[in-house]
Image (cartoon, rainbow, N blue to C red; front, side, top):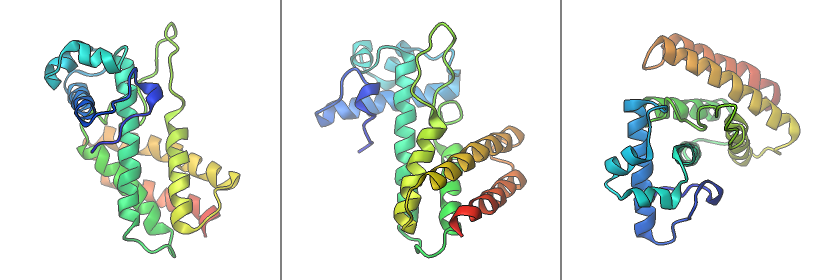
Length: 208
């Protein structure tokens, strides 16, 4: 079963499995349409039609398309964390570089294979000035989840130094991977390799 987005991003949290399945279909449809039409042309009505649900079902969960995209971003982050946890389960806790590689590889896999991820990965396009609705900085949220996962697997204390280092690594990696996918729709291999080297060199300061 797909993780349910946090309650603050939903008008109503699904309780029954049937309702949770409907929410998942709505978010799946939202992701597909993002790839096809872009965020600006996304509409709740089109999502309802693609999901095969009444428009009222969409509005039962979301007040507008931005709230729907925020929920999709939360689901993506949960899936990312779950994917990393699955990868880490097969890795020893004695070497940190394969752990960092798993973090990058899972992100690349989502960039290449998850619908809608190119436009809504772990956050949504910035709101206009007259609509300052936001949901916190996505990279801070990603860094917090990664710090938790890395600390648990490697037996580290998640102190301020580690949290800051992971945040800087996330920000730098985000920028470089965006460059890699602008250069090549599948992610330019050379830039990806440089990104991996950068992550190893930088995080060695706190993980060695």
